[in-house]
Length: 329
Image (cartoon, rainbow, N blue to C red):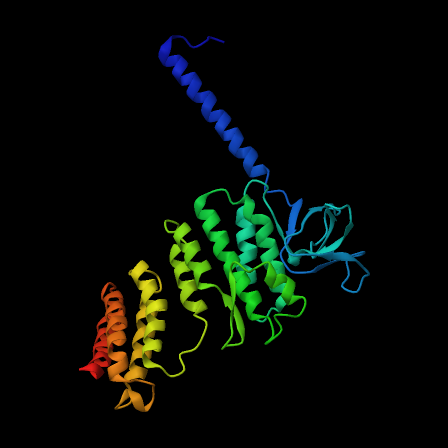
């Protein structure tokens, strides 16, 4: 066969080799789908059984996020899979309680599991704590700033769910007391409400560390939905101050954020409630001589926050705030 000669012929030959190799590589990728060998439990306290049946004897319990290897025989319907855990135990799991995990893109599977678990309603304290433990184990694998910010946000939400599951006045009892001791940096006790909540400082500290991350908006909104400890005991200026510390602070940091409209609507609703009586003092503890200076400060801070947005109810909220301030004129 005549060999190609000259620069143009060599260029054509190299192009042919490149295209042929690329096509072969793509064909290889198409022929080799993601292996189903490595899986991870996506539910809490999953039972490993001796045989593929719901009533079969248990080999053990696998916590959320336990990685296992599929060693079952091929050709089954995959309702059940035979797996081997890292500690050598083997048994059968319901396939629906696991997810395949790509060794090269593990974070995607972790995110899916966490989002699914956070969306659940009614899980008790053990399940919530298991989710926190799972997040703690995998957090170190998030190597970029945006990923670290997101997994830290997930953790605060998981801790919040666990705190909400602690029964009234049980914080000094086990298993709650020991677990709470490990969350001292992010949890605080709201004595008037008789509940444990996230520390406002912990949320805003995470926001400061993650200000440039896409999830910063949601971290700020978590501070709003988490709320504040204590109670206002009918003091009008206190209710206004709470809105300033919550929705107002969110708007100052994210005036065009995803929750700006909701924040403005809440401010309007609460302020309308404060101004509903003919005389605020008839429904709330309000003394013009004592409270007007503080009311003016909180009003101006909150009005400036609302003014910075383009939320649909912006003008209505500003009008409500102006009406409230008139009680001091």
